[in-house]
Image (cartoon, rainbow, N blue to C red; front, side, top):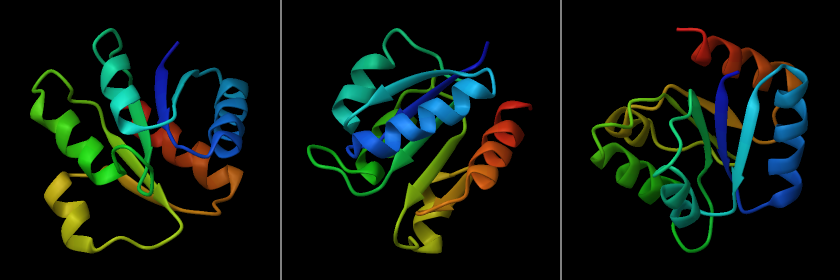
Length: 118
């Protein structure tokens, strides 16, 4: 079973994503902020991380930078946000995809399936 790390400070969104992905046979680990995610990644090698941009403590961009500093973390990252981030940011950080909130269940499942099947 493939593991997906979901990093979002909005618990209702994180839990909705978890419920949807568990229906699709993924194991989902939720973190409320970037620092918590980095802590979890010491013991976890997910097939994919879904990271929100706007979070307290450590925002999504800072979290991705920290993840990418560790060469052992090669999993794809799917970014989600209510606002469209600058294309340069996506290219600089090497995102595998972007989901604009609110996103459809189909878009979520399609993106996760595509990014974890490689």
